[in-house]
Length: 432
Image 1: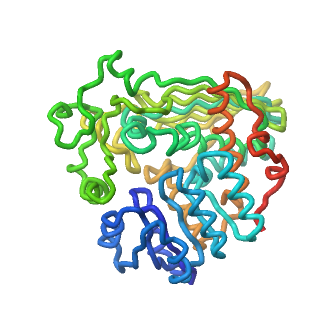
Image 2: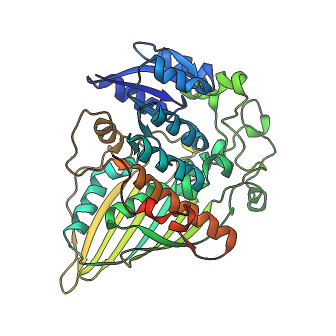
């Protein structure tokens, strides 16, 4: 029986808490957070409530509750402190992506993994999506030959994309911006698919749609947060916390503890992240990637195109083909009610293209990936593909986003290894 504790009792914690309580060889023994009301809410939903601790009491909690592994689902900028505290206490760690939000804390984590011999695994759930597994297999067995280039376009619709501009993610100091918090998923996928390491990154981006730009486009209304604001009535971008029992318990009813507002106006001032981003990456294999993230699209999904010496692979995933008016101001949780589809096509040289037969697309969390990932991370299932992302994997995805952020600042290409000041930290896995 492995003893788990969790720090960061927001909405993302629920996935892990459910998985732990369903796993026969795992036991949840404690929660930690800066907000007591959120911990109390999760305890009400658990069959067996567990002790709660303030986040600053983390080290004491780990010792007192004899924790084997800590799960980190707190605000991104706090990850590194929690991870290092756990490693130095003799615990292993599972952390939500991104592993952290800046290069110094990334190096601090890698150093702690190396010095303690403990392990960090990063919850890159997209690796566990059956469609992405199929892409990995096709590329690995040389279906399109040696890979020359990748084009990857990711679209967040005006329901999902907008949500990053309502909450703490809107401040780049908290989240690293979408290139770190969101695109890190995608950068990790490409690293994993190609078996490659990013070497150089160039980026362009701006805040085009949200924030003050909403007034220029005719969407902005004059309110700071939606709850209790008459101006928010009928606004498709306004989040109704009171209308969702779980969001109400975790955020609206918890505001008195720490003052955190979950339903900010997406067009209110103070946003320091971008919503339209283009990135060019060169890998150590010689391959390149052009990547684009749009956070204000009418539909949600992604397109992947991989060009090789024997042909081309094309993947299109439509997670929602439109945002229905009644769902526009909601938080995307799991499956979307709108239509979705997946097509995977191989286009070889000198032969007709063919579609790859796929399993029926799951409408559960991230195409069924969440359940598959947590089963592996918690020890309930073995994984012949060894998809659990290590601290090195987390660093490579993170540093791609950090290099892109620096490129935005400097208007110049940025070398990835130079961000850590010690390239050998990325040469091989530091996990014992």
